[in-house]
Amino acid sequence: MTHQPLAEVFGFPVDDFSEQAVQHRQHRLCPYHNRIAQCTKDKANDPLGVCSVFDTRGNIAITCPVRLRQNWLVEQDAAKFFFPETSHWAALSEIQLNDEHGISAGNIDLALVAYDEQGQIIDFGSLEIQAVYVSGNVRQPFEHYMNNPHSYLETPPTLPNRPRPDYLSSSRKRLVPQLLYKGSILKAWGKKQAVALHSEFYKTLPAFPEVEPEEADMVWLIYDLGSSSEGDQYQLKLSRSVFTLFKPALDRIITPDLGRIEDFLSRLQKRLHGKLEGNDLA
Image (cartoon, one colour):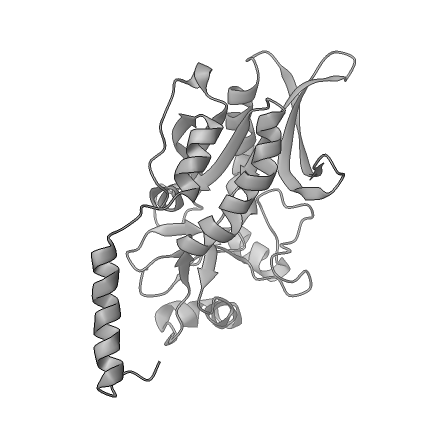
């Protein structure tokens, strides 16, 4: 179905017309543990209920962080890294993290806390859930689909500004600042961290130096969406866990590969020739 960009709408594949899928579309419901029953993405009163899209190669990109909370899988996988197996733990969402001056460094998506029999916290870890930004216009095909799903699938609209995952912006504008600010504070406190994201997003990041799980203070939880047959609801599956140390991973992700000055000079020379010949007005 890669000729059109929408993979899931309100929790179900766009070609799913089961009673449950239709009900979720009609009532704008979210099946993935949003803070309320309805989807609240973009606008609470007119939610953009696109959970994931297809890229131009037909791979699924998860565009909503709530989508990664299916079946509480990310919480369980993070807890396995943070705490001993027999621990009692709970997940607390959107907890503000302050620096030493009391200035907010942002909210932790999910703080997982281990507690004793009296309900006192004995340890905690941070779980950040990273979806991907979308470039292009995703609301246009979404509204076309919602107006008449069957017609949309039979004759997908022409999309001059087709939505596609923007991995560069997702890492530089979202992931990197979170690691720099929130992650650095948690590292200074000696607390473990987990980042959950889908596999196509992770592939766009630089390779991190890996360590053994018992040596790591950070884990990258990498997920895929799979289904058993056409029309079935996609199921979140842990594809791989990458165990790293926070500082080497941060250094790797914020330090670009330097490239070749010769290549840049060649592009400059080409643009200069075009400008001098009147073919480049930039």
